Length: 403
Image 1 (cartoon, rainbow, N blue to C red):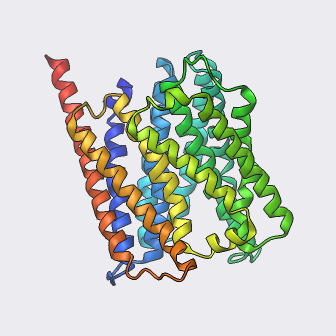
Image 2 (image 1 turned 90 degrees about the horizontal axis):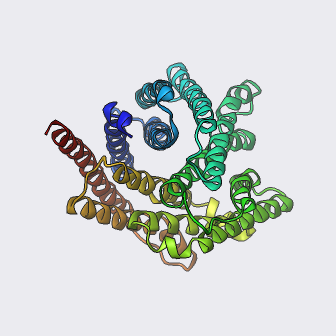
Image 3 (image 1 turned 180 degrees about the horizontal axis):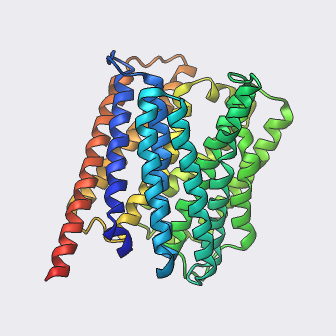
């Protein structure tokens, strides 16, 4: 990982996390107060695109590359990471001020091309290394497949607009192609792959190959859960339910085979594994028509589901990997910030999920937005703390080298 730290890419990732949290605070603030000169929809698009590119992709990509890249290929990985930074911050600025216009579309397309280039370099590196277990290799390959496959969604938007289908169910479903295969395909599988590489690469109780394959490829029909909002035919619910059940079964089999080792994982990873379990259970339940209609009718549940993946799964894995790579250093400060992050994320998700559930039994919770804003501000402070530890950790490492 030295070549990553020399390039200060962990700084960029940590800084991106802080920027992302700032936008999260602004969006929450705009729910309860008028903020002049800012467009909520523009900021929402900037926040989501930057989350995918500037934080999740940058963090996961550089960590994966750091695990497999041979020396002669590192320069090409640097090209991919630099292109990611340019496209991520380009999208952040252009979406914030223009929304979906020519400039933001150019940067979005550039990001997609950057992911293609990264995938090509990673596949070449994977052929040249024997360091990964079969499970980790399958998960990494599956993650990269869905990373590229997800781009079909945004690439289809232009033709759909030309065909006059903007605002229709087909147009919305194309957006969900990107959302689903990025979140459940690329991000989740890449996060699990990193855990496999770091903690389970040499393990006598690795699950059988078909279990990993089921976890990976069930994501294809699992996309149908994102179409349930339009109340499709019953067979769509059925196929989505079978896919969700398969995904859930594979995940439980992987956890069952690692039961003893899971208990020894760091706290952040225990949280991430719990979040994956809750997510797989939730996506199975929404395939029941009455539950699915209720879930997709409430915006907080959808936001909660997305943040369960990003804040509950992806971010804890990236933070743990940063610690394992020595980017943070060690100490009680990191433990305190980690504990604070876990508590705040838990509280944030509880509000998003419980408030709609209470409505079902006639209990109306008033004024949840101020609480969500407060939690967003506190999560921002956690982000600042993590960034400070990244700077401090690198400074100590430099001092040690100079001595």
